[in-house]
Each structure stands twice: as structure tokens, then as C-alpha cells.
Length: 265
Image 1 (cartoon, one colour):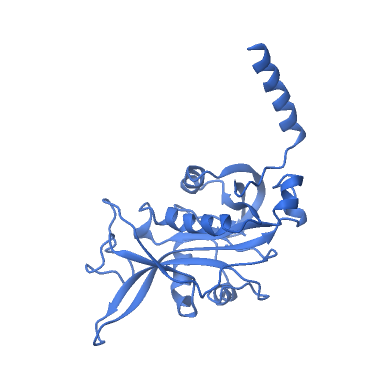
Image 2: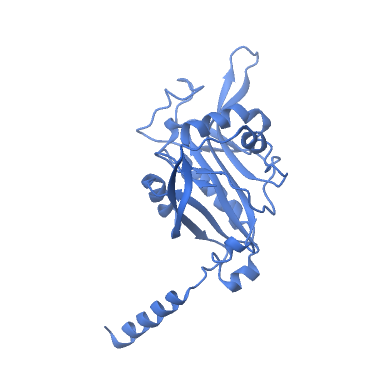
């Protein structure tokens, strides 16, 4: 989702790069439990006393029926406003031109009291959307070393990561990110995961650094929000043996550090 930003949690905005592969909507849903002693879901849409924060959450790809829910979450989390086509395509797990997306949503199962026996629907409380891209694109060539570009033709871009207000700081965002990292590392062709974070989003910066992402650079004027431009940081996490592209400054630093170590300075 062109990157990642939000006033108080990790989030980002959509781009349109090359996507080579993705997890499909036929993936089997998984169940996990998220807990927090200090959080409450009393204000969450669709939540009730029957569904405490310790209740199991169902994880699955986006589906067509998620259209309204996923737009609500993005409007709640992001200062950027996405157009209708973005959401129309996201629930199909594709870009506008049909190229696939990877997605996971965390859902709180809710019973339908009018049905007998009770049927289950769900309320989305978090989502992550990403895409595999070609590492050979011009704008990506400085992310991996020349040797890694040969062995890792793919990189993964985190488009958006968002949780509802009542599920922030509960570990849910980390769980969604973990699922994405597992997807990236399971594809040996993928050499890194990357994203953008608006420079004032300190909570997102701390979140990604805690999850072993490193700041690689800054993109000036990357975001335009209500007519004002904001810079973003570029964060990356190398996977599957992918290596950073070394600059001449890296080589100079290595030589200097070698001399310091050699002479015991």
C-alpha cells in the first residue's frame, strides 16, 4: 500500500511495481491468539463482551466480502486516501492490471444470533498487503549486491500494514508481519523485504527496527498529504542470504576499521 505511514501505527500507501508471484486466496485459514492485559476491544466495530482480546483470531487472505471492512480500516489508519479501485482490486488480491498481491487479514469470529444453529461471520481487526517485485527493476538495483541480484530475482514490498485502534500494541501487527516474513523467506528467490515509513511516524519506525528492519536511506517529498510533501525513510530486511549493495563508502569504512583493529587503536 506507495508506502508505509500512519499517525500512530505502522501503515503505508499503494504503488504499482512488477509483481511476479503471490499467495492466492485459496490458502487455508489459520487460527492464533492475541492477548494484552491493558487493551480493550469495547470500542471495536462488531465487538462484544463475548469476544475478549484473548479470543482466537482467524487469519486468511482478503476476500470479496471484505470490501467495506478493508476500506474502513484504511480510512481509520491512514492519512492517505485511497481511491475505490484500489479496494476493488485489493479484495481480489490483484493489482489493476491483474498482477497478484499477497494479503493476510486477522478476523474476529462473530456469531450471527438470528441463525439456528449460529453461523459465523467475522470482523476484520488487522491486515497486511504486499507484493513480490522484480529485483532487476532500475529503482531496485541499489538494494541488493550484484551477486544477490543474480541469485535473488525477487524482493517483497510491504504496501500496507494496519490494525484497528483497539488491537494496536497487542502484538497483532507483529503477528501479521511475521506471517509476511514467513511468506518471503519460504520463497528462496526473494532477497529482501522493504517498505517506506513517513519520517514523523516514530512508532512505526520503532516497530520495524524492533523487527530487524534497517534504515537504508531517505526519499525526499515521497508523500503528498493534503497538498503538503513529506519525506519517507526506506527500511529493508534482508532474507534468504540476500546482501546489501556495498558503496565505495562502505569499502572505505571497512578498510579504516581494519586498520583500527590491526593496530589496536
